[in-house]
Image 1 (cartoon, rainbow, N blue to C red):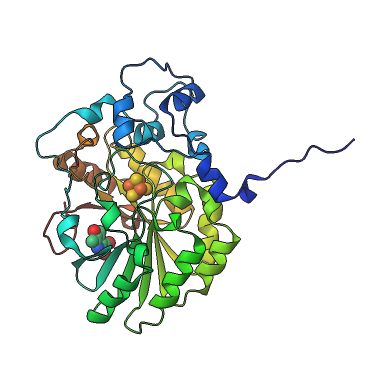
Image 2 (cartoon, helix red, strand yellow):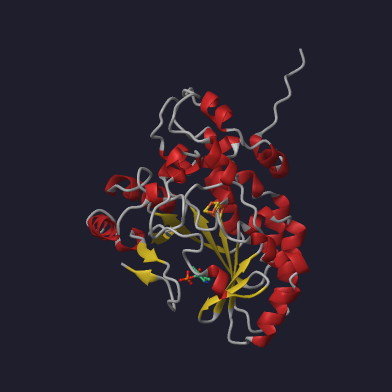
Length: 334
Ligand SMILES: *Cc1c(COP(=O)(O)O)cnc(C)c1O
Ligand code: SF4
């Protein structure tokens, strides 16, 4: 008898996995055994900012549980349509800080590149859901404006690839960028801000690792995970591979009501991160963007949570509570 052919998930092409991502809220509800007529869910919200969630991420959600912390991050809800005072469409001043196509220079010695608008997942609380990407993506001119900016600013010694999510770009495009960056002697570090390793670990494939390992700059990879349930063995495997090729691994999380706003959830997140050799970096207070008010945890509660965390964890596993304030010279700390 011939063995049934099975395809190991590690070999699934990431582009294929991305195409297969769930975009229909009703399909997501069916997969999770939830009532598709439930009034909490909003198709209008998903028209404003599309649902996108990779199947592997859905598999980490609990069945028939509306309060699942992973589901809450991706499900378009009626709550997003509330017009709340002080929640704007450019909460962090990015439009003003854009110096050249896709180049944000707000803080000393480091620039952040909006490399692409695309992400592997659409997080409902995202501070970039209203960003005018079409005019502002650095990949658009093959990085010419990025290089011009760096040449005019020799004090910049660190480049942060952000977005969107930089790993949404093809590895060939990323290589074209880093090849150019490496000709600038002023640069010491390359930083990636990415959620791909968490939500679609198939992205960390042989081609990507080959590129990543070839980069001579010091490499810092800041992943984005908000809950311990996101971090399974497949995620750990990808992170270990990045680390083996020289990455320092950090995590940024967003403090989100109903997702991780408890001492237990934050403690479990830190423990799960360090189990994969990832240090917690920032715990961001929510940026006040329209459509995200139902996620907000107020600052005093954030400060109290982090204070309490200190009683349960070694200092290196306590994230810094950070807020982004338009016009400030750095993140500000609670
Ligand atoms: C958050 C951010 C950075 C990185 O700040 P660090 O404190 O170095 O992590 C850099 N540039 C911009 C525009 C940012 O928003
Ligand atoms: S992955 Fe990051 S940039 Fe993309 S939607 Fe989520 S929070 Fe926003």
